[in-house]
Length: 185
Image (cartoon, rainbow, N blue to C red; front, side):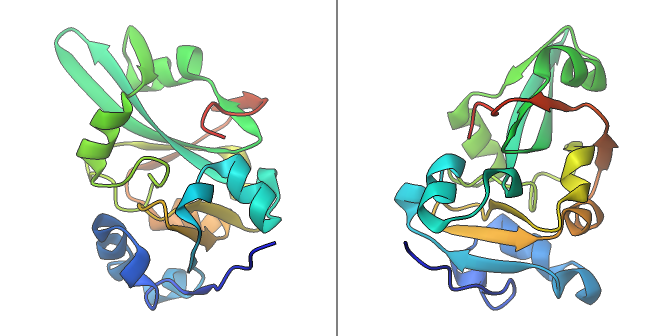
């Protein structure tokens, strides 16, 4: 089993996507002190593969899912963060939050372009500032979650509550996810 060489996030900026590193630099030191990062095998970036390979519990992973909703000609984007052991409720909850008629996962090439992050590494840290970030309430209760680092070759580790405090435009949502694996796991 491969091991994780974790270090403080600011020390690890060399293997974080640029938007992620820039967002971390702007955090208060008390939050930043609780965030670590580690390089990983990029072939193991997907949540289930990472959990299997590194022995990290699936319910300790948090997936960031970019969602697009349309209202008239306007496209509204948001990031939804749910535990990897749950499934995002796009058709009911996210649609209502975005106030759109239809919501769906954003096409991957579009999500990559808009975030400046790699497929399999998209993370809520460093997203476009105007995007709302919807955080399932269960994420707050996790003593530690692993999220993407913007690149497939790294992961970020932090308490769920720190994730909520570190992000702009966060709304904690009860019932954002339901039981069952999310599609990105």
